[in-house]
Length: 94
Image (cartoon, rainbow, N blue to C red; front, side, top):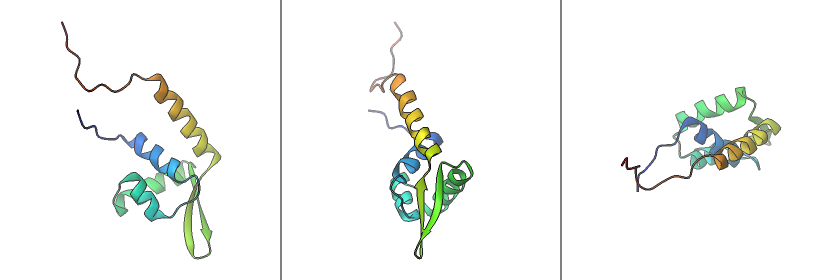
């Protein structure tokens, strides 16, 4: 079986999906399997794109998926369902 690197859009999907209930930055790091510096870059992108929003709950900074973020997830999942399934073997040309 071939291992496959995730693309930026797949990482964004994982981060938005994991932020639905509201999460801290460390949860996003684990959900995206990212180092702290990388997750900060992605969070900045998600905030600027308005896919997630930042709120303070007490002393904790939390991240929540926005309506736009939820729509992104629906569109991503729909597009993914229209693509070909992954294959374990490369195509053989005959």
